[in-house]
Image 1 (cartoon, rainbow, N blue to C red):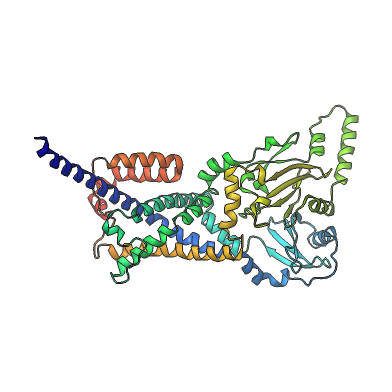
Image 2: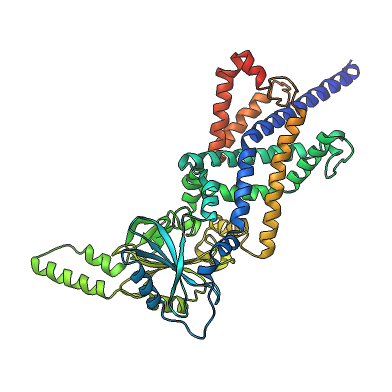
Length: 491
């Protein structure tokens, strides 16, 4: 009896395993399809704006060569004199930043904020102090591409949409790799091969699957490093937990302003792990402000002392000498924004000052005494901060010419992956029918458990993606599944 039943049991078991495998495959394919519908437009946008941002320096130089290029001379004039010329030309402006020329044939830059609130670079010939011209920081191809890349020009709502797209992009990637890996003879036929004579759909499928599969880790890197800047996953979770603790600075008064306040517009100039960290304050001056008022005589003396300190502010030449002694080469110098503000020397891969993340350094200097209040280097970064410091240079193509060329090829590949996915859908869609043409369902009793577990895991790992999928499933259950026309159209 047992001998007779054994083949029957084996056949039943094999049938069950095949049904479960088929169900998982079609479920994964449907998730891949629906995620792709949302992600494809964003992937195209991110790749195209990324291409523009990769060539920021070249575009800027071609547009502003006349105010950027100088003829090298034997000696330079003092930076303080250069700044005097800038303030004389723009008497009501406030200097916020100084960027020394990266090479001898380029101009120095002073970033100033005009009375209107507009921020511009004033370029100065370092050899004679002459003002060459201005560059509007908000009116550049990079700034426009960066704003579209980060917010779609829609502010917070645009940021949320892009975060949803990037989160769903991770799902698209994982499901795509699952579909790409061979399971049977049919899937093995196109694995790491391109079948040129099997029709346009098969050709497009092989190119899409193999390019996507081979570049999956690269695409995952771009998604994760991009998500780290997003408002929810990045700002509320990863970046918040990875921020440098200001408490590590001993006996240094802290401002209410964060490091992000030094960014100009959407430009990310401060290291990722410092953006949410509070700034230090100039110690001596802050201590006097907090000393309290005991008597009229004490008031008068404190006011006099504060005046003396105000007059004794450290000048830009002294700060630049200090930067040289500290070992800074290419950097940005941010000026104090208030009476208790600090000078900040920043050299980091985030803003493209340097290409070696191990040389990242942010140093805050008291504007009255010249004392170093805080000094944060690569050694103080936690693992996620180190990943971002190293990763952003690769993400932006800043490491080398080869890095830039490879990133261009990656962007073009991602554009092809997005377009080929849309083309495959267009080829396989039912012609003449008002339906979406989604992959067919293959129901199995245990499939809903897999979906539920996946949503729960996603809600923790990628909350925006998990939330959107939960909303779509809820809408499907409440609305779409109860309206036959909509139900048919979405299948």
